Image (tube, rainbow, N blue to C red; front, side, top):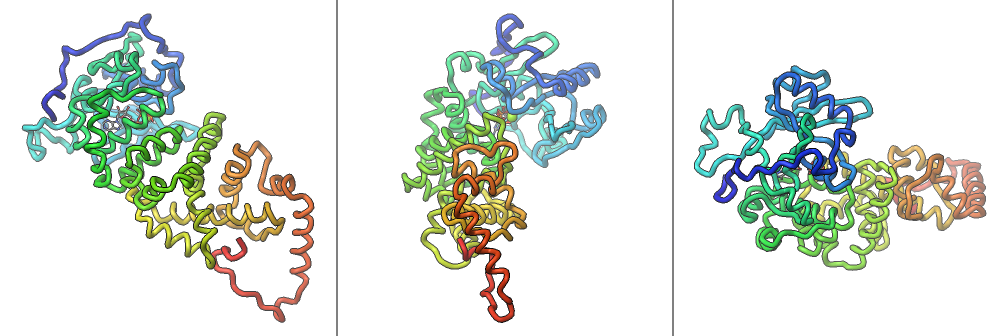
Length: 430
Ligand code: ATP
Ligand code: MG
């Protein structure tokens, strides 16, 4: 690890219970149980990361991460339903009912610049465990490196995060250039926190962004995909806009990113949809990953559909291929996104014409496509009980009746005398 970025215990600042707004009552009861159990067994255990940052700002955290000096094996012994995950860092995921997962990490540190990563005593067993102070210094930005000790009610700050929260500032811990070189994803994360929280980016951190931005393109595809997933589950609009203004989208989603950066109209339509999604999220809408990606790619797919004849599945699959996204989507995910996009196109056509091939309802992606359709067509998520059919009835009542009878008429024809052309991928009637 690096020059001015050596962990310094003397930089410690502690906010006592009455000096801040975070209280135990704000913390998820299951996270409190984990903290309590670890502490009862003699371990240090703090709430950390985004939860402390968000609660100090009076915001609702997305999740509650815990950090402890218990080793992964010790955590595993202490709880039922623990899964140890990750090759690079072994983290404990504790599962609770309702698909809730609380992540428990062991304090760790970065490698010193003069340390040999192959030295067994340094690197046992592939992870560098550390002290709370070292763990704070290996984090990305100061506002993400605060700890909350629920027993004392204290906020523990080794890196100046409290001051940066007060000054509404995003600052990389240590030398920005070195930390960006170590992990270029941090550039993206800096932009995200500034955009989401409405904070400014501290001067040195901001200066280093254009210089090191292109390193993002060299990140592992799986890291970029993982970070993109994090991006889309929260509010996306403002970060997407910031990534575009720094020309970073091309390094994340390749050819898509270039198109999004070069085409103002296309990007405007994407931002409109992301804004609709962000508002729906804040009202409790929980889209799946596939649905969110389909929404992100809808304006792009729509322009492709408009200019292309032929089988839509093949057309979109080829377009996806040639866009060369850096963040590589698993094949199944890509197939599902494409299916959703095609069904949405067919549903939109049905809304205009009243002609709908109801066999579409049998497709696995029919329901996801209907949910996305509401966001695209109406600008809000479907309410309970609303379906594509109800939207069709509202939009085109007369047409829908006509469509119903048209379908019936067609069915009555004896098929063997009127062979119909095969309809691969279900694309040709959109
Ligand atoms: P969110 O509200 O989006 O979950 P978060 O701050 O909790 O925000 P996570 O991606 O969940 O972000 O990461 C948890 C914590 O891990 C961060 O707060 C930060 O301290 C640390 N962290 C995450 N990514 C990095 C990174 N690339 N480099 C250093 N530290 C990181
Ligand atoms: Mg988090």
